[in-house]
Image (cartoon, rainbow, N blue to C red):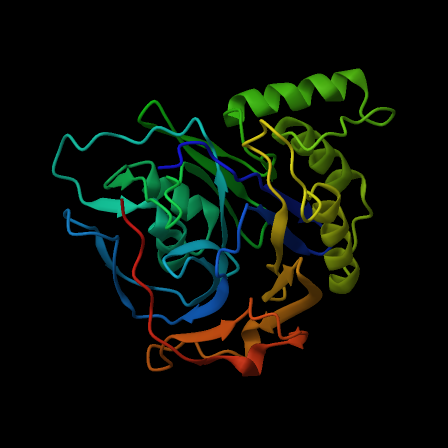
Length: 330
């Protein structure tokens, strides 16, 4: 069993003019995660994984997500413009099962959010009730998915959810637009505050460490031109996320928290377009939600992304009927 994480990602929310909001993220990992686009419709019967009293629900909203290992939702946007991003957090400690609440594995955590909520405020108000228990999932390579979750909506509202010492901690507010990995979020905020006081305009930390990526992403996303032009806004967010990405093939001894960036996503929450960038095939691809069928009769659909066949451009018409995957458990 591999016990050390090899994931290091970055997420940033861009506030443009005229409510132009885009959430971008990088996915850093040591191997191909067999990631693909899935379209999940409204009205899907769902459960949170495993046979240990899984939580059950019916999806209220359709979504397009990026899968991992054909067993988890790592990233995605629903038809209301709510975005969910999973990022690794070594310090995550999930609650022990000590009561009869139903279980949700973290491989299904992001999907549960996308299926059930239209805004960050709605999600936070419901999730803080803690009506279910979140349990850690294990990837096929043996690594346990200790993660925290970022959510954002089309109005730029944001929340970071972490399990620290078995307790759910939520940071809710538009100011929480950046997320990386370790340390826990409250300490990341303190580090960023220090750099602001030092003067980030003249000196930025330049390593691939999570704390340094946090500072750079925070500075660049807010110092970049704020525009209402969706194409310019997309280009801006992409440039920031690329700036905090880890070069492909990067290796460093005794640095388990650093891995190469394997893909990036950008969610245009105003215009409902969802973009994917595979660093092994660096042509941007996307889907346009206005042309997708999220109805309950539309069924599950899939676009294979990591087949190295040179996919490019608009993939909206490329979805094919598919079976839903089962969420990873322990």
